[in-house]
Amino acid sequence: MNKQIILDAFQGLTGTGTAFVDMNKFLGSVLEKITLQLAGGALTKSMITSIQLKGNSKVLWESSGARCDLTNLYNGGVSDSTILKIDFMDRKAMTVNAKQAGAIDLSVGSGIKTLRLEITLSGATTPAITGFCDVSPPTNDPSEALIRPLIARRHAATYVAPAAGTFVLPVPHLNPSEGGSTFRRIYLFSSNITNIKTIREGNIEHELTKLGNEHSQKENGKTPQAGLVVFDPCQDLQMTGRVWDTRKESGIQSASLQATFSAGETITIETEELLPFAPY
Image: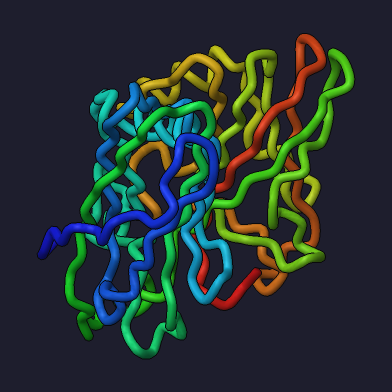
């Protein structure tokens, strides 16, 4: 973080509907974090049903207020009912590159020409949302050459588990035949998942009960949250050799994430991927 600059005013902000703020004034910088301040009409994070950050009208990052808050708390964020942050960096990572990977390069060579944040509210009265961004200037530091194009992309999908049992989850961009991705974390918003298993190239790589998964995460400084199950290959705060790569260009032909449910339910899956702007 080099500068903290206030967001322009949101346009079309009502109790139910979608508001937006153009962020083109940040073009030319590196966007590290967006901090939103919530006020007015008892506005809560649960009333924010959708958040989308769009570059050139393409969705780069999406979540809801409640889901975003849970993932922030899992990653060691501070609980504050009036603050919601969208952080593209991994603040507690052990190396400089691991910390900075994911910040959005908005310099001329990035290909991003427009940037807009859209927020959808439901059930609020006289809401007020303000905010500011942490930005820094782009650098030509050779040590950052490999991470600078990477964006902490987040995409969401829903899945209906029909009953108790084990099922392959439709994680966005996981399938190598469709290009695959590089995952820093995968968030599963579920109350009934009891086990998770990842398989790559026919080999089981992670097979843990929810209890065992959370114990491992606690030992690495994470804070598991009720209603959230996380596949976190980078939980030891390192990135090199830890991200879960399912890209076809890396030679991966097959990969899947399976979950065992104690009962049927509808879940939301959110990815945290490190990818350049161009894919998807």
